[in-house]
Image (cartoon, one colour):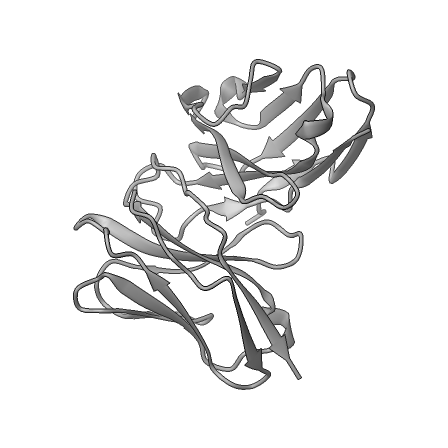
Length: 111
Length: 115
């Protein structure tokens, strides 16, 4: 599975959009981009995933560049409860493949 | 539907003792994964079951760790004998067989402290 690069930390004001970047320049054609987050000491939580089209769900939007070498997770209106470590993971489809977590981005949402 | 359940939520044991962690996946999920996070380190994969079979156990640190999933339902992870470096949070996750379109569902974890 391809490696990903994320900034170690980011800040965001409450109510503003949080844009979390991820580089995955070695991604291959059958690999998806997944985003998870871990709030404090809870278990990781699935947020969203995509292959090449932009995706949106009730939690977030995922923007994938045309060359698929990078992506951005957007939390449109960040709240204090969105403070967490966000992980960008590249993985081929199929439940047989394990998730490989990196260091992630620690997002701090402040009032 | 009920989520992934892990028990106990916390465990404090002495070095040399044995501890067994349990994970109940979402009903019908064939895939079950164990991960752990040692303090200050990244979340690391331990092993993966498909039903009752071990699909990938490449992340198991040593033979003091034994995972089972009898009958393809719940799973246990036994550490025997426990060492100080085994302290951390152990997470279990489950997913449907095949393409996991909505990702993996993780439990809340078991925080293991070996003293």
